Image (cartoon, rainbow, N blue to C red):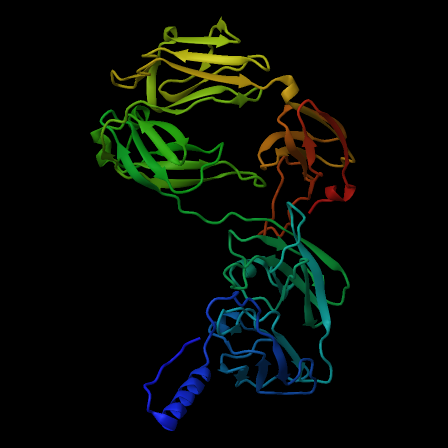
Length: 557
């Protein structure tokens, strides 16, 4: 409440002025501050002509919405089938949207207008949903349809908001990949269901896409599902489309180039590095032989940082390149390569040897105690370390290839063992220098999990009708094991950490040893996948499970 005081003696005129001021203030219209964001899309309440009208030949469509709307991107979103000429215009008048055209309409034809996300509300930009209009210039309206649902091939979950694109079945796949616009479009609902209606009699190639950029086409990196190559509109089949992620194009590069005076160089890699990837030097015109490569040793990637040893000033003038060999993603038969230009590193102060990573806490059987330093070392003085298992001195057997930044203690300790590894000063010597590590005595301790701390899962797999692979994962989705399976079998996993585990069956109907994802160019769906129920494991438990596969999972895509 706002109170306004007037000086005494103004009389009736002062009172009337106050009333006028308050009334004028109350009449002002504005958006209230705060409150929840409006996420309700505009709804159209009527149209001229009406949807489904027959024997009409309009030169415009008119829609009335329940709120103020706008349509800034209507040309990129509007699809008309059969197509009209370029002389189309759209006008917005408050709640009304009017689409007009110059072309004459053909006789005895059903016209379908699909607006996509073209019409949005003025304040929040929420798009009108399923905005579609159809009418016929003849006595009959096309009423056939193609229906189905779209699911995630890996999880089986329904996919909401996917665009289902229909093309004439006579069109080649190359046309679709080149960006040809579909003839008809449908959108999946929260249950993954779709229905493309007002179709003429005939066959259609069906493609479901995530369509993040709303361009009515599949772009690499978007999830996609290939449907039938010829879905008949007069058929009542409910099509089941399985969508998989696709690999987006990338242009990796190196940044933050630096080296120290001992030739220890490093670069920041801008893209994700996965286990199994590798790097190599690419020979260029300015690098005619392999002698330079032999002297400049790549040390791998850790934490997104590429490291190499042996960099000297003569490399500064060479146009060096690295080849990134990508591991084949799950669902692809082969990997791929990228070539990266190598920026000349700037010289920085000497990177002193320091401990980057070490074993600690409780390790599972089979896990190695790995020590990682900040720079490569050339020698390890094994006389300057002491290894004890359960307080009993033992000989340390390590896995190490100099020059390297890390070494690992070979496995072999019994479950439940307490490991103590002591390093006296000077165990490791820095490459091409007198620097050594550690400066002071350092003791690392860890324990291997005991038998009663672990669990065992026994899985009886039945109903196997084709080759495939059985993957074991934990609650974080990390792979614990991958087993080739060709027949009913009994699988046993001892020494598992407590928590949830789950099995995934990746079928391989063609028997090529690889689970294949969706392939739009070949127009093949993903090979079938199935997931078991999650199993809860607790310390010292033995859990036995029977999983019967459905034979239809081996029918192929």
